[in-house]
Length: 416
Image (cartoon, rainbow, N blue to C red):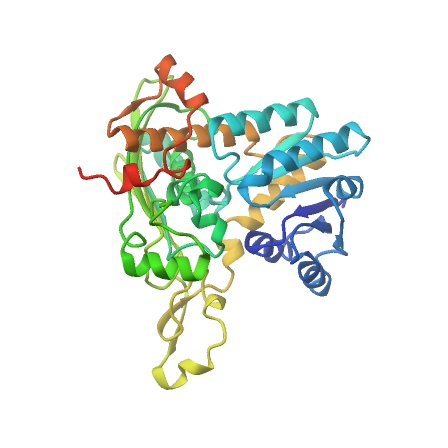
C-alpha cells in the first residue's frame, strides 16, 4: 500500500488530537513536525507511539522537501504566512501532493480567499479539515435514512451545537488573534455539519444555496467581573478591554436550486458549558422521520466518589474539555474516532494519493468562513443578512467584525 508522508505545522492541542487519530489510520506516516517549543516533545511522542519518525524541522521550506503533504495546525494569525512559505517551497522544487488546513480556513473572507488563491497558484490539491462531517454517527444516520429521504423528501431542519467550558490556549480567547470568539471557533463546525445534513442524498456538499442568516452573539459568563479576572489570570486575556462572545446562536436558510424548497439550519455554541465536558448535539428532522446524535451518550460510564477523587490524574482522559474528576463521568473509549478525525485522514490519504482534493476543499472552507462572517455581521446589525444580495456579498469580502477588531464592547456590552 502506497503511503502518504505527512508533516505537521504546529505541535499544540489539535496536533496531538490528530496524532491520536493517526494511530488508527493505515497508509499515512508522520514524517515531520515544525512548530513551537513543543515540537521536540511532540516528535518524541509520535516516534514512541509508532506513528512515524517525525523529524523536527527548522522551517516550513525544509519540511516541505521531506513530505508529500503538510497539515497546517498552527494558530490562525500565522496561516497566511505559512501558506506563503509553502508556495515558495513548491516553486523551489518541493513536490507536495497537497496541503491540509485545520478549520477555520480564514479569520475573514479576504484572508480565506487569499489562501485559496495561493493554493491554486501552486497547483496544490487541498483539504479543509472539518471533522464533524466525517463523524461515523452522522454518516450512518444519513445512510440509514437514505431510502426514507427518497420516499418522503429530504431533511428540512437541522440543529447542531458544540459547547464546552472554553479553549486551552490564550490566543483562542483573544478575538484579535483568533478572529472572534466562540462563533469563529466552533460556529464553523455547527454551520458546516447542519449544511451537510440538509443536503439531499447524492448531491455535492455545496448543492444547497445559502439564502439568509440571522444570528446573535453574547458574553454571558466570561464578561462577569469574577470570571474576567479568572480568564486574565489564567490566559492573560482581558475581556474588559477586548471581549469576545462566549455564546452564539442563529439560523441559516438554504434553498434547493432544483425544487426551490427552503430548509433551515439552527446553530448554538458556547464556551460556558460546565457539565461533563465537550458536547456535540445534532439532529435532523424530515417529514415522518428524524435522527439525533449526542456525543455525551457514551457506552461507558465511570463513577468516582469524593474519597477517591484525589487519585484522578487527568480528567481529560475521560472526555475533551472535561470539567470534573468525580461523580458520574461520561468516558469515551475512542474520542478521535467518535469525532471524525480518523475518517477525515482516511479521506485525505485516498484523495491526495489519487491527485485529487479532499472531500472538503479550501473553496468549501471559504464558504464556511463567509457564513460565519455573515453571522457576525447579522449580530452587529441586529438584522437578517440577505446572502443573495450582491452588495452584501461585496461588503463581506472586506468585512472584519467589531469583535475581531478588538471592539467587542460596542456589541457585547450594549443595551438592547
